[in-house]
Length: 170
Image (cartoon, rainbow, N blue to C red):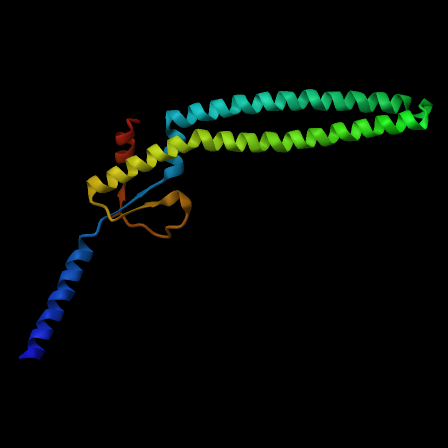
């Protein structure tokens, strides 16, 4: 009798597990594509481009100054006393070093600015994805832009239209 009860209990647990597995719902979304379509992302890109242009303009002025100093040095090099020649060479080397440092700092500044501009957008998208997942009763929503998901079937729900609607994007 105990054996029959254990057997029936095992069958019920197995059937309950299969029923639960059949009810699982999955979704997918291309987050990179979604973010690229958002007006906030386009505005952030424009702001980032303007910042990059300012930094590039300053770098151009510094490079032109270096080129002018180097051309002047080359024109006078043979007629300069050793001390003045060495001083001008050191000045040119220092300016070249400052330009390289400025370029590195400019790249870091742009990366920080991009992070600062994108963070609220990513948080907004993540919140909308979470809400859609909860509303649709999904177990997982996979980001197919990350190339980690190797397969998704037609049964997987494309959450992009739902997230776009949640974000108010056409």
